[in-house]
Image (cartoon, rainbow, N blue to C red):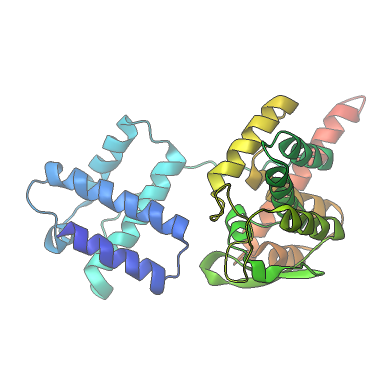
Length: 296
């Protein structure tokens, strides 16, 4: 019975909530773990009546079980949020979801990398690729993340219809919201060089960034390449593909961009999500002050 409920919830997330595939996978995995836990915690079949009868103690027991497996505060808070949504879906409009305060999560700041580090990383990834066209592909992809502020999922969802890149690019982000981002000439040139070198045909309806066998490139491939390069360059562990997007935002803000414009460029639903970069910029200025002021 729980299998049917989870399948229906997945469809609800996809079609009504318009959640991304990545988010849906995470939510469904949480629901599956929760139902498996309930089968031995409560006993019997996990069906809608059981899910509607849960208490805060049931949720507390599940989180304790997950904590014993090493789940951290941030992950526990995300799982609890997913479960609330799942239980609201099961109960319908009149659902009474057990109330349980989530763990305290200290909100961390994005960690930008310096411009020379971002470019050095892209060049090193290209230089160490096993084939020339693969290096051109990874270089172009990383420049899109840093030069246009794309999420890695957004870049990998681009199709050949985007070619040739012009001065702007339409990007589909979270919840299928589309935004327009400017494209620097260097980024357009890197993408064009990759497209020319790629041994696989890039069709209008197929992925722009292709893997070694001609299928869509998996995000894990580029993350692994970045991991190898950052170790070779002695860069910190925070230097990830997503950190390039944070760097894009921080460097624009430091250069005088206003928050509303930055919100549009990043595709944030609310200004609150963008305001975190003001703290990042302030933190950067404080670092400079502490290292440069003779009395600091």
